[in-house]
Image (cartoon, rainbow, N blue to C red; front, side, top):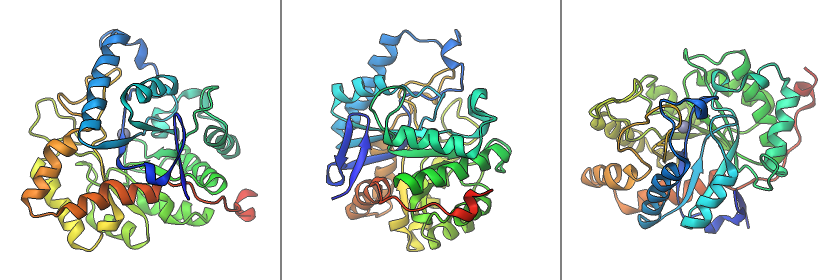
Length: 328
Ligand SMILES: [Zn+2]
């Protein structure tokens, strides 16, 4: 049947199990590893990360999708060690979190160049290893509008998705209409795109979420745990109960099979403190209990954490890319 790329090789879709669709082993801006203020000894970072992944495993978690793009702390050899040590499948991504966090080196590259780069990481491997990316990351730069480089990256991602069958995961779904236009122009069906961070407190738009779902896209409630009640919470946080209610409204509209949940947490943040106490395990320890209290049944969690991630992550048959668009 289908297969999914993990850092230790492809696995059959049935192997995926409970999946956190948008997480980070450690995310930081390019250069973060040089910041003495937040620098941690490698063995300390390793220890904290192991603990969080092991707890994830104890909660029944089987697959961890690391959405850290190129140059943002993604380290596939490290991911391979972590996966071997914990038994958690780790899916790495190619692509960029957003143009404004991409390495300057890549900023002037063409759409064709970026397409080839993403295709290489999906079909050959990342950083000279044979660890293949299982998804393509794209995103919206700060300011709430796709900038010119964001658009180039979206277009390259669409072409790489058509060529390889890998899905796309977005950082933010603000300016979704522009993104949808690009995907339509490129001929990529929206069921290959997870529009992430619909629950981000700074860019809420429920009409947009419904539109994406109606058009067949996937909607990520995947900044779960960035609660404004937590001391030092970043600007995209929001009150815990608001997020729960937002999510319940989405389910009540009949969109259960268009949604995924994740925490966008760092096992060990790079070059910034991360949110204190936050980890992927917030899903099992806080969010799911909140939903249970609201009367949500177990079959819903199975859909959110197993069946939908399997549909998104399973590699599709390659499709031809559109000549007319390519010619630009
Ligand atoms: Zn993220």
